[in-house]
Length: 535
Image (cartoon, rainbow, N blue to C red; front, side):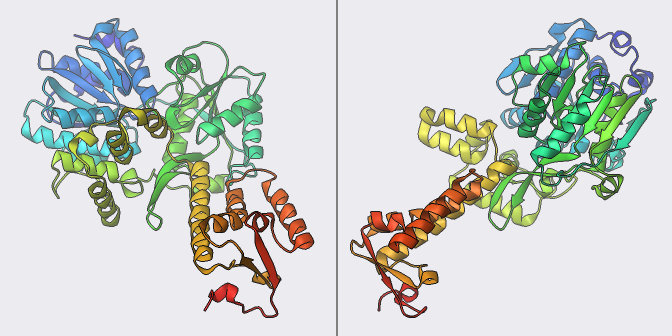
């Protein structure tokens, strides 16, 4: 049994934990910082003594590790508390913290969750796709097992929706929050995410005299702000760090500046923080249905997320919040975070649901969009998806490549899985893809018609003395290079334009035409066979 008095000392949740229902599903509503992640799991374990362990899901790996470490330290019983994330685990006999992805694959392997008495799903209000699926699967399992219960923990007033879905009471804990002094300091360049904007964010953090937590949307921005704060005691905090790097930011009594992504927004306490500097931006998954592509895009955060970030400054004492946007901007933020199931790629989710055997009555707060789900099933059919693929900790398309090409592809697959397409990377990918498609079309057209398209602006026509694919590839290299400049490589555009201009003015043709051994002819009319091909 856990000593709840020892673990919950000073935590607001401790005042209401004795009234927590001992049976059935429950929705726990408690503001950030009340201690629900720390105290509820051992309380559930005490209620289920002898009937199985309690599994707790947290949306991020760093939060899983931090929660397990905190409970282990406070309880003084490290053998009872374990965790499992991708690539790292520690056994625990009574409580185990995991990510939703880990639990999803465990459910597919063992649909009855033998030896588990309860699953507590933390931060359900964030509406991550894996979290929604875990909740639905566990609710269906609870209908089959009378001794199994589902506990949903939320920090927002959206708890009533979960209560209706789960047919469960809401257990509320009120928290006495420390006062916050909120300042609005709008800065130019926020929408575009310029270097200057993040430099101004860094200057705001540097002016503070207390330990400061800075929120930015992604790893690139974390590095930009940290670079701008060189000379200060600054620590980055994001999901791609090693355990030691994350611990360096979290577990120290030093006055410091911590620059973090949204992983520090919930389920995670950064001790000592009295000031929050919020860029007001988040990186979220989006699917472009027209192009059939998915990636992470940078958007303004929601009001609920902005409020949660602000609350980080008032967890331990009165705090200060500096919002790098205007109060009018805040009023136009979305009230809540858009559920991932409505905007993200559903390929992996569809595979999980198919392997689970989910029917039309599968319990979800929001049904997936029919077109996105149909596209996901088409992708799964195309790659020949199986349950074996669902158990791999990566995207089904990458997993299919791994199964097809074997261990030699593993390093590349692992890199791609850890580095999804973000806003900047996605833009580069799109530019390169467009360049390649257009380039391929031009090569085909010229190889089959022996004339160069697109020279009409100069009333010139390139006559290929050496027609064929090789010459066509050379002639159009200028186009490929020009399109690739959309990736943002500096100095390429002016250099390429300068070389092309000098060459055309001096010789009447580009260097690439010369390499292809082409001749140039001046046409008397704009309408030339260059458009129409040879008749």
